[in-house]
Image 1 (cartoon, helix red, strand yellow):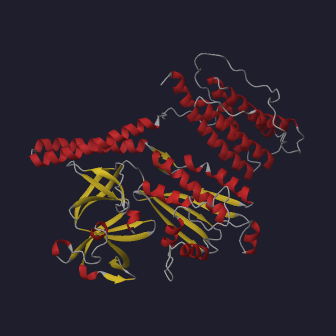
Image 2 (image 1 turned 45 degrees about the vertical axis):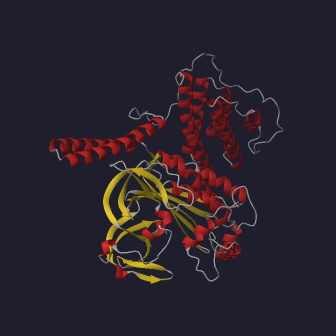
Image 3 (image 1 turned 90 degrees about the vertical axis):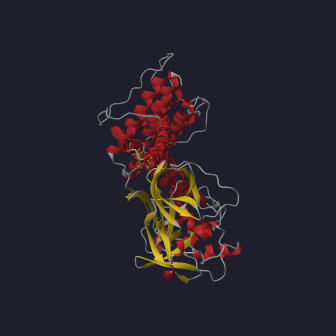
Length: 552
């Protein structure tokens, strides 16, 4: 990588952060036009991007940010007032600035800024009472002073605008690819630690066992630090959602308020990047299908403004992301009608929340009367379920007519290294992620009940469904007749909780807990779709990782 490319990547990373801050502050300013703090934050972000772009010799981002800054200066000085028209203009300008930054850094031709620059200039020159005019596109933007670009063969060090926050020299920006490589090596080191531990135990040499044990402690401590280095606060993704909800609400003629809590919770960077798209789909669906129009809400005795709550919180060794809207809820009648028409639901079959979600998450399934720019093609919930399960997580869903819809996404804290319960089923070894494992226990075979077409066991005073993994992996043959462990009359069970649901699975033997490094796994055609990856155990043998969400 050349010096120019290194500077370009640094510029892009910092510019993205400032653009995200700009978007968040613009939405906050629209809600409270007199909020000087939001206005100052927007100005600082744009001014910093302008300074960095000028230092890099990037013409389009420099000119565009300079003209945005000029409009903001009018607002900060009080010569002009904040209104929805200028907010729209600034949001459009922000989008174009983001596109210009990305294109320039990638070495591509940036989008032509002449039209938006002309609109920014004309807004400044127009009457205070007038909104920003939309002129006919022209080839050239009006002449407007911009900071000169100094020609140079190498970029100068990036200069940032003064900020109210003191520079934090205790932090270091690191390329995520370096952390990924470090995590992969850490995973291999953990596998080697397991092999050395097994070898030392076999040899029975006490000095060797002590040395391996000490090395193991250092490896565990190193692992904790590597995992911690990959953790980033969820606000890095969540802060873009107020803009998303605002635009979706305006395009559908609705009034929607988004409340976000738990933004400081930290999650593995790779997980955070992956959950962005599923949350976008859920938020768009909530606005388009869930929240009613202001008139409908008033007739139903609700406030005109709909409400969406997005919450992130830590629960034991996992993270729960909750999304709830106070809209109309799912029309079960429409879902049942469509599902029966497509053969997905039998006559008289009960439609539980779990069954409802599985039907709605099928690719192409939709009850929307028309396709909009936001939703209606039947792919949103499929993306949500597929993505979350590929991350070793689970999705829970509930909906009540008139009261709204709730989603719960359960995720591990990190993807690369997990604790798992190792079990034996039919002579094969499997790993059950500890994220969803509550306990392992035994019950007498005679304690198993049969009702509603399946088996149940008592788990802490509540009846939980039982899935016999021996039968599942054998293709369902001999349902309800798999032998108890070693003919003792007892079943070895694992109690699982995921997405608000409970499930008990039977195994042949518990082999203990291990820290595992999950590797990608492509199941053979026709295989039971209940595996999310594979691991290599300390003895060198592979084992499959169970996808808990698909076991039910």
